[in-house]
Length: 95
Image 1: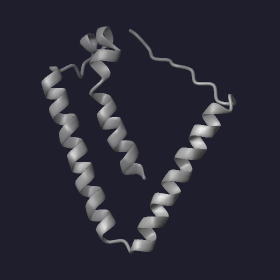
Image 2: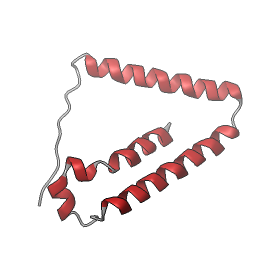
Image 3: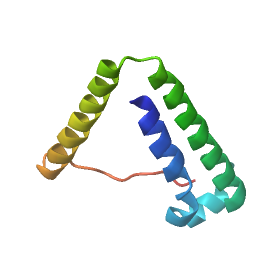
């Protein structure tokens, strides 16, 4: 399941220049959008290959169990967020 989070992070990283344009320009990690996209896509491909190799060593029952657990976790997170008990505070620091 950690690979799913890592893939989502890799894909979301490509959106940084659009979400935080000023901060991205000042960032010590700043690079062109093409270079950023290349590395994010490469990381996503590598993670998908890792998922494939990890799943190929599991039995079908374990794969089904993993998928069921993932779906239940997503459903729980969705309903927990919709309940109003979760307060998300967006914060980041500027120098």
